[in-house]
Image 1 (cartoon, chains in turn orange, blue):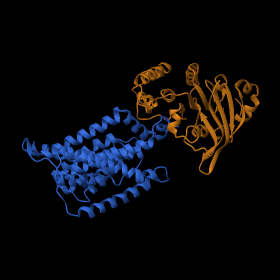
Image 2 (cartoon, rainbow over the protein chains, first blue to last red):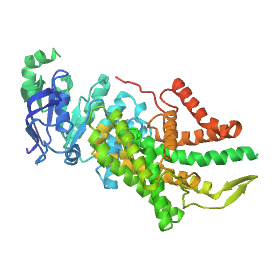
Image 3 (cartoon, chains in turn green, blue):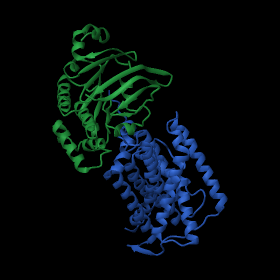
Image 4 (cartoon, one colour):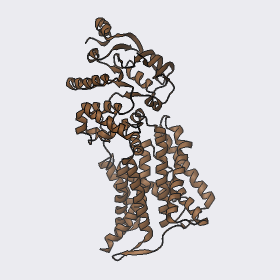
Length: 238
Length: 292
């Protein structure tokens, strides 16, 4: 398998407050890497650094064969690195359809846009019914669907999902993960971040545990299952 | 019947000019989060450049409108490139940029004063002639102002609502970070918004100068009124600003007619205070609801 995303020894954070102290991650084509760990230990910071919102203080980052550690947010999106942020961050006063079209902002071919819109509606039929509804009036689950659907409208090669199950009822989490599994079948790669790893055990290929800005454990999902004590120590039992 | 017609004609003419000024001001506020104190000078410069060109070369109305737009857009672009751009990511942007653009306005006003002197000039372009609606004499220039404003605001509405370009502007205004995640170059969007709002201000300045006179301070009063309109509508609400511009102008015209022109602006201010007490977020503004 060819390497799609490779981050090495990433150091970054906010002004006067370093958050990541040398985090590495690799995702091959078609693979799912889940970064788990307690809240406030740098998971979101890691994704925001990879998508270009925070500067690399040091470390290397390549994606799809391009060195991107100094690239603009825009250039990373163009390369196919799509970040679906925590809390969805929808365009509140736009309709569902307009939100989705924003996801295809860098796509110029109208037939391709129409195809992708249809595909999102097939994946989340609920959104088709609500395509004209204003985003701020949607339920939490519908928002999540728009957030993920919006990420699928561009030329994504890898989706970075920040807590796709956050704040959702178990049934909705199940729906979201069913959709993600379908996307996996289509060949998407994922770098996901979750606080609660229970659902990931049947979805991720590999798991990394991020604690206090460092990766403290890394392995396949199978290995994670066997060394459950490591995970429970950090995550307080699941 | 003549009195309501008179009020309507006056109100619509004033409303057109207010709307041109307020829509641009609101667009800048909504997208960049900046109150542009130099917006009045964008108008003044538009009017003076048309005046200079028309005095020496002669310009038809349509040419004058285009020149005013280009001038306003250019001033907007320069303001962004030379001043605003450097402050955007700094701390206290909203406060700093008010001071910076206020300073720019003073500078531009003094340069205009130096170049043209303080005497009020008569704008050289304009349409003469009148027509009647019932017993009311309406100048053709009023009609021109209404049509130009409608076309400009209609074009901006179309741009914002129906095009990919406009969608990117609205997205940036609603959620800057999310827009960047979609691949929008927000710095380019800011520049485009400054150009667009500048163009509207340039036209507003030209239109105002055709019914009033040119003076270095001519932008002050419309800026104040545009600001009042934006606050009443809800800061950053572009549609609300357009609607409120006409509403407040009609109110001002009615009060001017029944009670005297000098009560028009105080009445507007009282209304603002009332609105701010009753609906602090403005008539069309949304209450900020925090969702967890």
